[in-house]
Image (tube, rainbow, N blue to C red; front, side):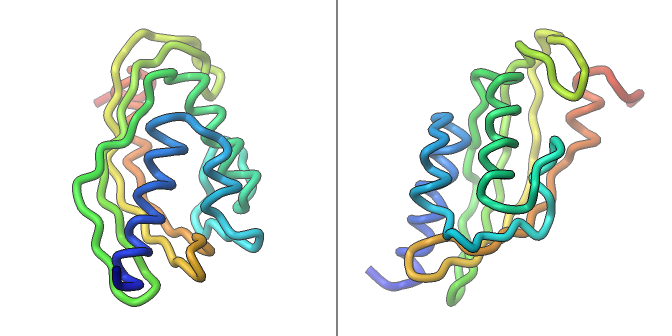
Length: 140
């Protein structure tokens, strides 16, 4: 297996573990100690491993069935691009908003840099405004 294919596998396993299965241990398994999220993971989280764990905890508490559907993984050298749609049912409080019972869909793109089998950097763009619209918090 080439390094590029191994890097894609690391990213896929991280996303499946953390966001689809809710395994917070995926942070320790797949993110390097010096991991940096160049775009904050949101929810008041810091741009490091613990911030990613915190953001995943907040998401999982609000959307217990949260999962990420992978559409594409594209890799070159140490970079892996993931295009996905995450979705779940709003069953718990998030950002001060009580559960609505509504299903939401959140498309996004992440770019990960992998070094020695661990993710060291992440850049991402998510349709957060679209999620707020789906929850009825922002007019369409």
